[in-house]
Structures are given as C-alpha cells and as structure tokens.
Length: 111
Image (cartoon, rainbow, N blue to C red; front, side):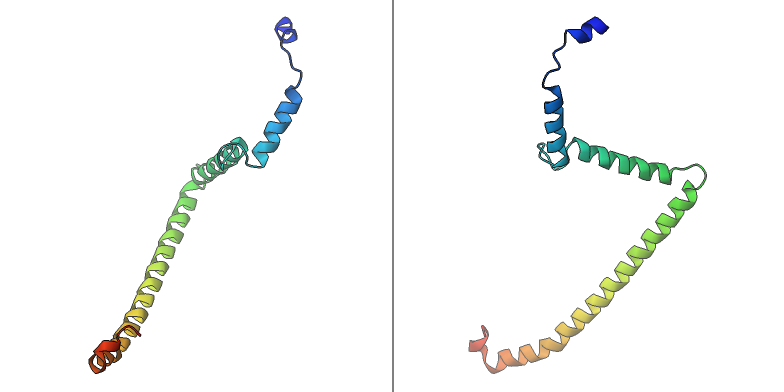
C-alpha cells in the first residue's frame, strides 16, 4: 500500500484543493448550492428529522408542531377573511358613486 502512494504525484494538490474549497465557500461552483451548501442543507434536514423522530420526545414535538401549524393557518384564514370583508365593503361603497358618475357623463369614463 505504501508503494502505491509513492507512485502518485501529489504536487499541486494542496493548491487545487484550496482553490476548490475557496470557490465552494464563495458559491462559485455551478449551482447556488455548492458542495458545502448541500452539506449544510443535509445537516439541517438530518437534524430536524432527528429532532422530530426522537423516541422519547418526538411525538410531543410533532404534536406541538402540528398544533402551531394549525393555529397559524387558522390565523391566516381569519386575517384573509377580514381583509376580504374590508375590501368588499370598500368596493360596494364605491360602486354606487361610480355608477352615478357613469350615468351623468358616459363620455368621460376614462378620467
């Protein structure tokens, strides 16, 4: 095994590895997620999976996460309904005045 390593030319490997690492850290390797970026994403996904699938507290954490997601979607839906009601009220208030203006001066609808 040692004889095999002696026959491999390692000159310039340090500089090449350094330049690849530097470009990977700068995000200059083809895609927005370079090798290091994919490593970080994989570590985050793995950590989240480990946190959620923990045999001792995983079920409790998943339940809390589900409850928070349901609360968020409920709050979002309630806020959307409020905004829709507000907008529809504004439209219905503006509709009669626009209708009356069109009847008074149908030639001047562009302004």
